[in-house]
Amino acid sequence: MAHYYEANVVFEETIDTKNGPKTKKTKENYLVEGDSVTFVESKVNEYLQDSVHPFEVKSVRESKIIEVV
Image (tube, rainbow, N blue to C red):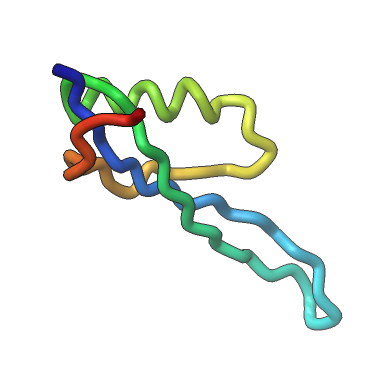
């Protein structure tokens, strides 16, 4: 049986404003199939490695979702 995890990722984007550059943080959630928190974190980092914005995996937790149909 597959296990699903929710990975919370924060992206940072620098925006130029009239008062100078400002950092904007955007939170995104990913549903990932995996066997452990460590595996899922690694999988998310690999998936997002070509992202134009720096990111950090903030948390990974087991999801209550039991199956994707």
